Length: 596
Image (cartoon, rainbow, N blue to C red; front, side, top):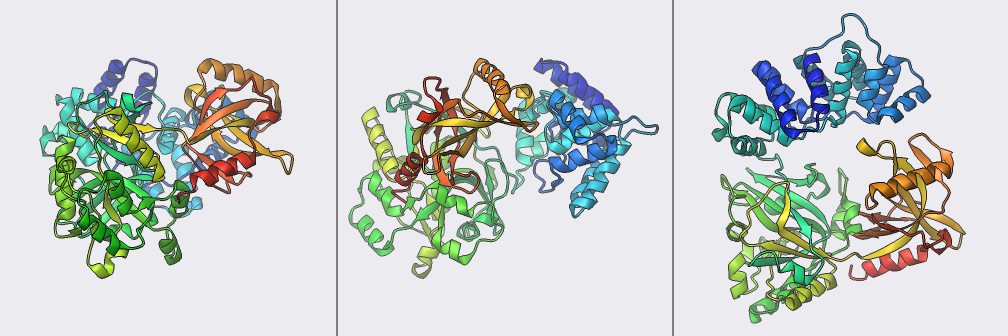
């Protein structure tokens, strides 16, 4: 473990990516296969392979207490060291004592992590963590803690570990990257590279792939300038989710690759009957189903050329994210909540089907396979075979038989539209907003699926719901390169009835480094209470913040919370008295929910 830690120090000491990869490659070659495989996982900032459901389940407070007990330092002393480094691993290295006989093998650390993961209860886990750190040298402890927190902070991304594996074992980088993507296990990928057997890597189901990301466009004109043929979809305000279906088992994963199936127990049954294994990409939304599905069928049958907007409306409509939020993070969803907050899975892409990885095929082909998969052996509400539809595929809603139609109608093929002019695209945007959706997704029909990457093949066109002028009430030191500046701002609006400020959100992005530096000095000089990492400050600084959505929440004393708040600009032209009020917040919330 000491060699591992020393190499991590060397990696952190250089900013050159090629040099980082070369250090890792030399280190891996110097280890036996078992040690190299574990090291590759650790160097990726994980205690276990990405595909594993195993977690340490230890928080920062447990680690903090373990370091405090072993170092015999009081809280103020530890806090001072943390303020200096901004990293608990570095704190451990500085404060933990040197003792004779210290030193661990990397396989011992891997075994200890397994024991911690298997232990039940904080007392058992704490004892194992303390024992592990006590047996480690301070430098080893530094990186053991960093791995436990999932943040090495040595400028080493998993992509550089992949480069190092390719370099160390004479493999092609593309082969290494593909094998690691399929397996979700960089240690196993290393073993295949050692054996020169990377081509035999197989897709591991229930290990989520990276999600393809989109880039923003500001206008309809810009949205049609990037590629010749575009598919247009509504941009739903829900939870992006990847569905894995295999052998009748269905699991859903979020963009953070966490499993979220428990929050949506009605969705697996809607996909369990697919005729082959598959990985789907889509959005889970709180959904308002049509009141009369029989009428919907009749309308569609009589008017096969119904306009795209009407087709989308016939499927139902998304409700605001604030409604869906009530379903999140629940291990058990009540029958009442299932009835009151039904959800739908809006499917718009297919990554894998029947043993074939589809991400290298163009979107138009993936869409065709997706339509065939969803209609195979199932009844679908068709929307007519228009020319535009034939390019991408049928839009429909999965059902079973007529008696089960409402309860089973939980998976919907996301409607796809086309626009040839900015005016048509703007019309689709207005229609999407009228349906309560965020805006539009504009996708290149020739594009492949690039997991975890953001480019110009997928574009998003949306406009902020509103902005608020808010007052900063508290600030926190940042992380990483921002550890020495106050960059995280809690902000509030006025409750005029009580003549006080009520917090409504927190933001850390939007200002330049120069502005953050200037504001840090101001906040240091205008601190009301120093709480260590956090300071309450004189409520005089006004910010303009934008956000995607607003929801009711007990997290803040305003009773509301902003989703994805971003600082638009400082407002030195405004005094705190001119900031927005809770009445304005309610007005925005009610307008947002007027279509729910």
